[in-house]
Amino acid sequence: MADILTTSVSGLLAFQQSLDVTSNNIANSSTPGYSVERANLTPQPGQASAGGYIGSGVRLASITRSYDELLAQQVRGSQASYSSLNTLATQAAQIDNLLSASGSGLTDGLQSFLNAVQSLSTSPTSTASRQALLSQAQGLAQQLNGYDAEIAQYSSNLAQHIQGDVTQINSLASGLASLNNQIARDLAGNGQAPNQLMDQRDQMLDTLSQYVSVSTAAEPNGMLDVYIGSGQALVTGGTAQQLSTLPNTYDASVLQVGLASPGGTSDITSEISGGELGGLLSARTQVLAPAQNALGLISVGLATLVNQAQQAGMDATGAQGQPMFNLGDTVVRAAGTNTGSGTLTVARADVSAMTADDYVLRYSGGSWQLKDTSSGQSIAMSGAGTSASPFLAAGLSIVVGGAPAGGDSFLIQPTAGATAGLSVALTDPSQIAAASLAQTGTSPGNAGTGVISAATITDPSSWVPDTYTVSFTAANSYQVTSSSGTTVAAGSFVAGQPISFQGAQVVVSGAPAAGDSFTVRPSTAADNGDNSNLGALINAFGAANLAGGTTSLSGAANNLITRIGVVTQQAQASATAQQSVNQDAVTARSNVSGVNLDAEAAKMLQFQHAYQAMAQMIQTSSNLFNSLITALRSG
Image 1 (cartoon, rainbow, N blue to C red):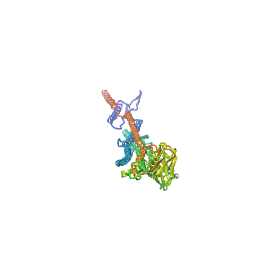
Image 2: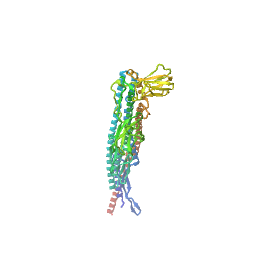
Image 3: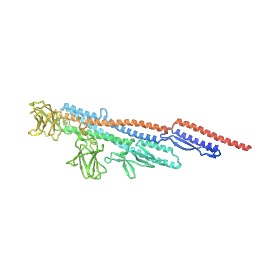
Image 4: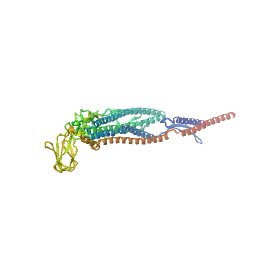
């Protein structure tokens, strides 16, 4: 039955508990992840009387935490985006700084080598200039080797970071599953939410979002199912799934991310996004692998252009030039899942048609198909894939052998291994081929104004050393004859257009008259003062003869530096913006869940006064009871 004492005692207990909650809030005002709690009071059921229901006091119905799931998800989403972008920016900046360092960057090294070529062209017989060029070649090769080694080291460090992140994610997943079980037990036991455990779970989810993007779904029993990436289940109820690192099917040094399930471990690398792990994977695909391939294309271009020039020229001893640079081979990797005995031999066939992309050659339906891994586009191939008729595509020559099984595949990396194998093959400055293999001359009786250029050997393998005569049977026609009188070329003459024959090429400008002639003869040691072969090399450096004839060697270097710089700047700018978004989201959540000491102080005074009032009511109840007893005794 309701009475003043019972009502007052209920209020005393309720306000004491409210003070306890307020005290706990103040004590945890600086505790990370703590959500401010609220004491929710509710009236006791009233007692019926002739005049109506009389209240019987108050009780503490529940203690709830101030929490907004939408704000929490905004914090985790922005945190995952910031961590990913910041990681990408950090990794990209390392490569950017490596390649674009002032005075020692990639373009500086190439320019120094070209300057040495130009310097030698002004004094082709100078031993000092030849030695300077050879030293620059060695320095450039070492510089490129160093870049490649640094990128390889970054890739190795990145793999270790991926392993570390996977370990951290697994630890957090186990902790979340354990908390799910504890929360479900507590809810089932007394029907009240264990606020401290739920705060711990939310803080653990915040930490998880630093490593990978996170989403959650609540279960009726208080558990949270946790999903990562594009929706892969990491925690289901009280059970945690485990991530693992898997070797790439083509290259064991490249780690993929796997997710264990009852049916086995599946590769979810392409599904991972956000967080540090997502940023590391993005850095590998957007920065490190492309940078190594692009650097390899530059090495291929450098070695090919210089070696072709060497073979088209004569060195200081009168011998045909030998290759200046050695170069790493193409890389071919068989898939670990191959079941057949197929083999692949790949060589670079046409540097002008090559790109910095990798390719996958797959055997399916009794035929081979080539696909670009960057664009996903199929690449048309000519030829039969045999030694006599290799597949030709993307500047590559591909010979297949053995007995491949359906579904077998090979990864082809035309440029990835080129830089590591780059070195200088020449040991003596006299081996530098400054002069052309052929010299030109003008007949003294020419009547026209025709002028012949220096000879360029465009195909050393087709060059037949002999004395050739370029004669004009008419002002608009020519023929080229050998020393034996055999005609080896003839055609209509257009001033300034190349005249090609026997692997050589000359250009006649002006207006030759009918009967005019010019000679092209093999060079001798006495012609070592000629610099025309160096001039051809300088021209080749500036010509668009890489990436399908779209860029020059220096252009390829600038494109690489620009590409990495753009990725770095965009990632840095986006990371800064996302950090601001995250800070705003954290502030918004703190406004709801954080402890406001001023508000808690006001509540403390409110509950304290109410507690004191209830104590006075108990005292009053005691006085009334004593007065009643005294009156009864007096009567």
